[in-house]
Image (cartoon, rainbow, N blue to C red; front, side):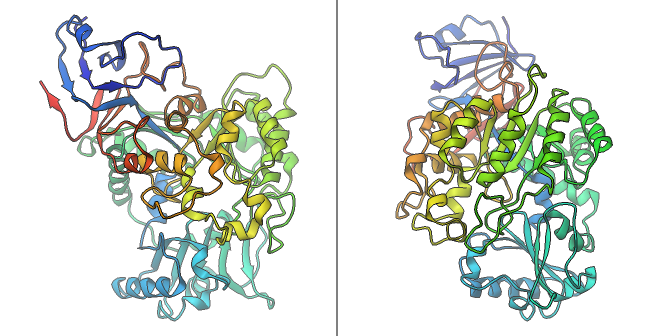
Amino acid sequence: MNPDLIILAGTIHTMDPEDSAGPAPQAVAIRGGLIEAIGTRKEAEGWGKAVNLIDFGDAVLTPGLVDCHVHPVMGLDMTRGCDLSGVADLATVRALLRAETVATPAGEWVRAWGLDPNAFGSAQPHRELIDDVVGGRPALLRLFDAHSALASSAALDIAGVTGPREFDQAAEVVCDGSGKPTGLLLEAAALDLVLAHMPAETFEERKQRLAEVFAGFSRAGLTGIHIMDCGGETLELLAALESGQDDGGLPLRVRISPWCMPGSREEDWRRLAAQVGTVRGNRWEVAGIKLFVDGTVDNGTAWLFEPDSQGQSTAPFWPSPAEYARAIRFFAGRGIPTATHAIGDAGVAAVLAAFEALPAGLPRAPHRIEHIETVPDPLIGRFAESGLIASMQPSHCTHYSRADQTDNWSRRLGKERADRGWRCADLRAAGVSLALGSDWPVAPFEPLPILADAQLRRRSGHPQEQPIVPGQALSARQALEGYTSHAAKAAGEWQVAGSVAVGKRADFTVFDVDPLTAAPDDLAMGRVLATVVAGQPQHLSVAAAR
């Protein structure tokens, strides 16, 4: 056989449901980036002389972990400045902003990100809450949901934002009773009014920071990601990283889904469709289309059957849901995978309706709904019948809501809808494929804590916290499937990825803890020993190689 590489490990979880009841595998052989053989250590002795051999001792090897929802290039902009993640009160926000202002050179914008609206307490986000601490300078605070931001008075002046605006999508420059902007900007079109006036980094600076982000992904155990946008020179940055010898190329596989937005027309859809499967590199490709039917619960732009507690979240992101459905017919009719952001119950129902109305006999492609934060029982049944894939982020639940429902998300929805939050277990029980991810930079990307949170329904490492709707907890295997086998199904790649099987890609993650048997809090503290992509180690921290 003489493979390129043989990997030995104490435990190999193949995640292949068709595995026989034979001896547990502890060895895998790789040739040409694919798995050539799987067997015991004894069987590996008969595979011939390998070019390389890595023995991980008692470590645990699984298919490579894939984060099914990230925004790494968008994250380059969103994570500049002061990190407000986890800040729980306005006084701390102001103190950190004051320090960031002192540290920011004169003439530059003050930036912050990760702001949880719970920090405002009963107050409404308003520029007057930050103008004094930034000393009258232009400043932009990105809220954690990536759909909203708070701009200072100086930032609004620079952007020429003096009152309400009209948009093709459900975006808003929030204004007070006199028509003057409060500084709160909702959804991309409104944010772009200010973002367009902020100084940009050079291409080389962005490329270097993106390389660092990807290296962090790899160290955390990821062998693949699904990027759910295509802005900010994404394609150019990926091409430059992959071709740059000094940058080490791409340490993981990258699938990209550009946005199809309200106001676009069929000629725009044709341009997007032409990229799918044709614009690609060695480890990256444009592989689908991302659409939106609503925004977020936290900023009042989700689409609900009934208004939230503030009378908001009643309108679709596409002013014409029929136009959204027409876009779905266009892409689905061409066999192009789609992923639709739908958080509220009415939003999820609209996506289901669009797919239920498709004619029979269309080309097969994986179609997904992203987020799915609150849905009633009837939608679970329709979801299962639709064949759509659920793509969810457990840490959205565990990081930004609370068991006592005193958080902004729960207060807006009310008890009945909050009790129907993040129904991961119900979707799995109905037979729905469930892909998992982080939505970084909205939430941390490290997969081990996310796998733990999916089982605990609280933040791992915080045993004093009560679980949030604990009946929706996933089993350890279901959680791991969300990053492996079900992630592959969400990409339409089950025939080539997602399990350790002969002929599939040699993409692996190696741990010092067993993700199927470890207590979730212990799993969250585990270490990733290696990531392997196409039979090539990308991150290797501890290994006995010979």
